[in-house]
Amino acid sequence: MIEGNTAWILTSTVLVLFMTLPGLALFYGGLVYSKNLISVLIQCFAVACLASVVWFSVAYSIAFTETGDYFGDFSKVFLKSVTLESTFADLPETTFFMFQMTFAIITPALIVGAFVERAKFLAVLIFSALWLITVYAPVTHWIWGGGWLAKLGAQDFAGGLVVHLNCGIAALVFAYLLGPRNNKKQLIPHSPPLVMIGTSMLWVGWFGFNGGSALAADGNAGMAMTVTHISAATASLVWMIIEWAKHGKPTLVGTATGCIAGLATITPASGFVGPAGALVIGTMAAIICYYAVSFVKNTLKIDDTLDVFAVHGVGGLLGTLLLAPLGSTIFGGLGHSEYSILSQLKIQIIASIAVAFWSGVVSFIILIVIKRFLGIRVSAEEEEAGLDLSSHSESAYN
Image 1 (cartoon, rainbow, N blue to C red):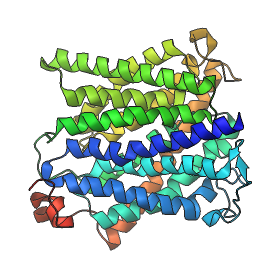
Image 2 (cartoon, one colour):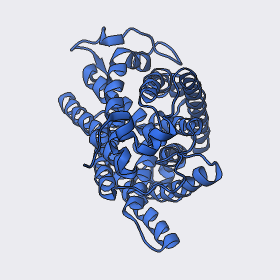
Image 3 (cartoon, one colour):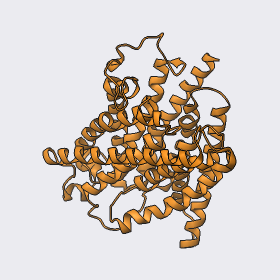
């Protein structure tokens, strides 16, 4: 069975990497103006490469050495104490390392959606590296590495806190400090077909994201995949219905966005809820994330361009809280919590506040420092010309 578990996690690793490259890159690329397509693709690709090196060199050690409540140690930097015989969670540690690396890759890549079309490429790379070390790795340690939130009893099956709320808060801070795009017109996606293709890749890859987080090829993995699919399909339909009712016509981009909201929201709960809970989560994800998009843009006046906070931050928070009641056998859940619904909900709220606070404060500090010494935004002329030509001397369409 160990060999079967290892095979499944190796497969899941490929699926989760596939989510970023090319899934997320194409999803984001289709949403921007054509003059910025190359810039989005290279940001996602370069962040994936950079995150891989940072994870290998230092971040993995901070996240997954069980020596402290808040931070790990440096005993596994450059994998210096990891051998072919090393194990973690009953898996070969090299397998576990690679699986978790794909999470470290997609999390900063998700933040890209908040600052497309106006951020300096070098600033993006520096921020991503520092954020992985100072925000992502510690939060991962708190929850998945035996840290203080794990000891408190916080539940996050596949990354509602570690990935989605974490990156959503950072995205909101980045968008706020960067300021809105100079073109105040509503962004019209240049290629809805690319959005649909990217979404489909993300949907398929998410089975590795959530199903793989069972860390075994068993019924828990099967149920995680089941509820993931139900939530995604439900949220997509509900988002479509809302859009249809409000604007008279459904759109491909809106339907795809609803799917992503359902996937993000089920992520923390995917190992704890049953199919009925997934139906509720998918419905709630579409409704709340849909209106969160408008709230961020129109009320907060923050140009989170591709709605990273509204979809991932809000979705991750919503799923983190809903797993407390819906994970209970009373509501058809799997009953994996040793606490009452109210006690588990209290723990989930504490964990959410802690992650949001840490991500927000540290992200703000990192960006202020980068802004002071390098700058984080391109010039108005470069923005108008498009980052494809002004930052990379390439064009997607000739």
